[in-house]
Image 1 (cartoon, rainbow, N blue to C red):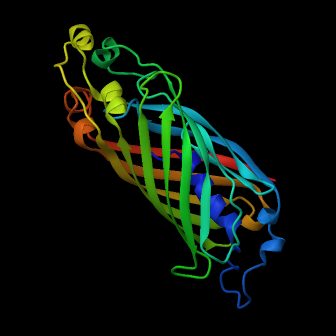
Image 2 (image 1 turned 180 degrees about the vertical axis):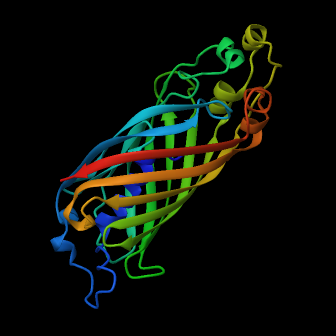
Length: 286
C-alpha cells in the first residue's frame, strides 16, 4: 500500500513545485511562489495512525503509528516512503516538465511483526529487509488547470540486509490538485513487481513452514504482487497552505493482491486478496 506519509509527501512536493491556488471567488491570480513557505528550504515533520492489514494479504486489520519527515534543503528534496525515505537530487523549475532522480531506502517489515492470524504466526516471523535503490520519475504541471500536476515514477529496491535478498519495483502515477487555498487532493494508482527471491521469501510455503502451520506447500515465483488506488485529502488549519504551519491529512485506499501473492495460502487460505486501508495524520511545515 501507499502509506499516508508517502502520499502526503507527494502532495506537498507538488505544492512546493508550483504556485498555490488563489482564494475561491478571487479574480486575482495565485500568489507567486516567492511568497510561499516552499520557495526556499523547508521541512515538514509530523505523524499519523494507519489502519491496514496486519501483513500483505491478511484479512486481520491493525492500527499502528507512522512518523513523517519531508522537505527541501538546497537542491535536494526529501520525500517519505513507507518505512523509509527518498532523496531527489534534481531541482526543477515549477512551470515545466520536471525530472526526479535520486535514491530510496526503506525498511520492509512484512510478516516481521503485528501478525494476528495464529496459523500464519505458527509459520514463523520473517526478518526485516533493508531495501535500497534508485528512484526516478517525471512530473507534468498544468494538465487540467494551471495549478495541478501529474507525476509518474518508479522505485526499484534491493535488499541489503540478507532477508529476502531480492528486488522489488513500485511504479506509480498520481494526480495532484489544489481544491482551494487551504485544501489539496491527490489520487494515486500504484503497483508492485517482485523478483523470484522476493516472491519466494514472502509468499512461498516451505516444508518447514507447512509442518509448523498446517498450510499446504506452495512455491511462489516473480511477477506483479499487487495493484491499487489511494485518495488523499489535506487541509491547512489556518486555511492557507502557502504559509506552512499545521495541516491535517486523511487517506483511504484499496489494493488487490495479484498473481502468486494472491494464490499463496497466506492469502487464499488464511487471508483475503482485497486489501483496504485508512489513515489520519498531522504535519507541521516551517
